[in-house]
Amino acid sequence: MGVLVGKKAPLFEADAVVNGGDFVEKFSLDQYIGKKYVIFFFYPLDFTFVCPTEILAFQKKTDEFEKKDVAVVGCSVDSKFSHWAWLNTELKDGGIKGVTFPLVSDLSKTISENYDVLAGEYDYDEEENEFTFDGEPVAYRGLFLIDKQGVVRHQVVNDLSLGRSVDEAMRMVDALQHFEEHGEVCPADWHQGDDAMKPSAKGVADYLAKH
Image 1 (cartoon, rainbow, N blue to C red):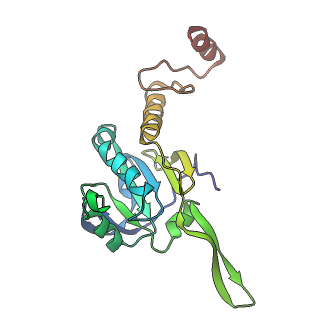
Image 2: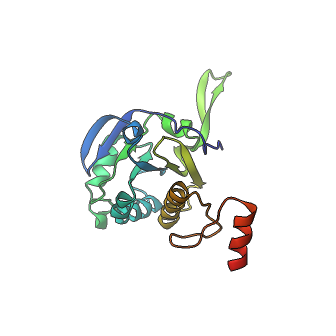
Image 3: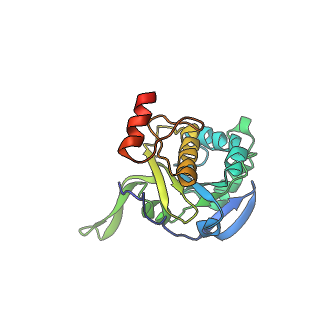
């Protein structure tokens, strides 16, 4: 699994569904550079089981993310039409109606490959003269926190059956913004409002002395 932290987030242009039902061609994360942080997360498939719990959890925190200048963007290997159908299906029927943040279509699986979250890989069978796929042709539950310069500052990748913590994603946003504003590093289990540390031996010593 590749590590993208400290590197520019891979660029792409793809179909997406925004505002719960509007199709957009050539959607790109470039639009946020210099303007917003981005939580860009992958999920395996529309109309599944764990995925809607995560997507709806992100939606519940949308206002809080927006207050912190964070855009939330989801992505899976489904088509834009599948995204649209899911977004327009009631919750009681297994849908995610009411979700407003963008869902990107990675039908070609190239975005998942570039972010190194595809749950398998293509191989060429010389005897059969054909390409095969080893694994699951969907994305792992990858999440990337991208700063306003387009650089990945945090990533986490879960297996298909393991749902993520939206609160942890929010904590990472708070930690990054605290560091950028105050120049202080954030210790283990740090939350907004807690003491942080100056990045020096004395800063660590002072912090440990108080805790």
